[in-house]
Image (cartoon, rainbow, N blue to C red):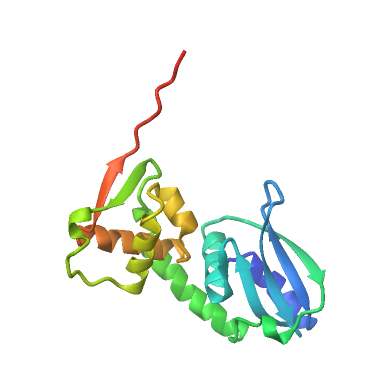
Length: 186
């Protein structure tokens, strides 16, 4: 696993760092999240709309997919109440490796951005079993229908959204419709 944040984390661990390592976009320096340390241990991660272990996984998956970040180390006082992660870094990396493998299985099956996904109304009263992940995707689909919006507003990892969309489609719960392009006036 060649992830740019690993040496940054290991360096902060070696000096028993307490504070934040801010994650910034290398293109526009926009704040994307942070790694929170207390006494050299990661105690929380915030990345995009996720927190905790899921945010750590999402950061790792994005870096695996060759998205890079800038890291700004910022010492500050951190309280123990902010701790959401209780695993040692080595355990987090092992778990991340499994998440990346799952991501690689479904990564190329993400629906194209130019389609809308709708819930088939005729299936609403049926007794089809849904996993918790599928239910979360269905919940997001009540408000958002464009593929990119679904991924942006669901608190699942991207590969979990893709996997749920695939299984919901196989269960005939979803309808896929193309997005009409707006006519251009000259």
